[in-house]
Length: 427
Image (cartoon, rainbow, N blue to C red):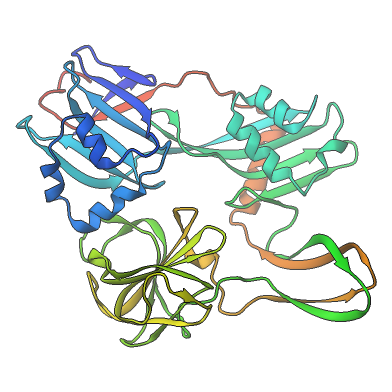
């Protein structure tokens, strides 16, 4: 049984308990955090080596929660390591020792409607009308490149549906806009928004987009350009487990993040560098077994785990497609496979959004005579889920003349307390 208490940013209880929301400071390690609350580091000995690896995923400025007693003793802490999972640090019933676990983040996702009348520009007007800077930023991002906002006039309207996650009644992570509609004297346009916040006029078909740059034109010839930088880590692809912020672990039988893609393959299958780079690590890494990591240009780093044998050393330069090791089942593994991970600027991303079996090529005619601006047309397929349903919802909101949701300056919500004996009268 869990008990609920009303809270506002800093939560106070009549029996002396206090919950606080804070931001994780820069350069603070989990070990340093234990020191600040006089928690014995012997507690870490009970944490598996695999779970200890997730401690490095705590990011600067992540919001986390602490529950303190009236003497300032830490009773519980919830520290996110991704959008879906968090560390749970809590004091045991003996009030002397602490326990550690990684559990799913409990949050709500609610849908909101907004209608913005243009007086100045979409960002300023949305911020004034809705009361949230993050929603205004995402609205401006969705319109970029689709509508020339400088041509909007006073009295024009922008309406949209968006979702917002919340924890303990407080907004958690950035909002996600689903669909928009721009209505002006000359425009009556729906805009569909993908999970990255980019808007499109159409979906489920090849969308043309233009790249402009200076080129020296002296003759005419057909040019092919690659649309993909990263290749595949194996010649033959068979995915057995996809990237997930929250996956049921087949060996641990618990929810854990799966920051990568698993490829099934026979033992000894060659592993290929997905791009040019420098070997940043080559050796044994706990449950991942034999691991090779490659640092690539642009802030990327690739990760190849469970190898049977490695063919590279730290500091070595490698080329795209070069063999860097062989498939195995070293470490914690249910059988021969490759666990492939990809980081972008220090954060795990879904590799399959960046890898391609073949480089995507476009063919265009270019005339070289002198330096001037040349436009190149490229194409990509856009598939956004729920476009018809979201468009119908937006039309209903507009037909019913639904008012915009205005965000309050202070938030209220609930605290979940798990100690039944101490908090049984605090409902």
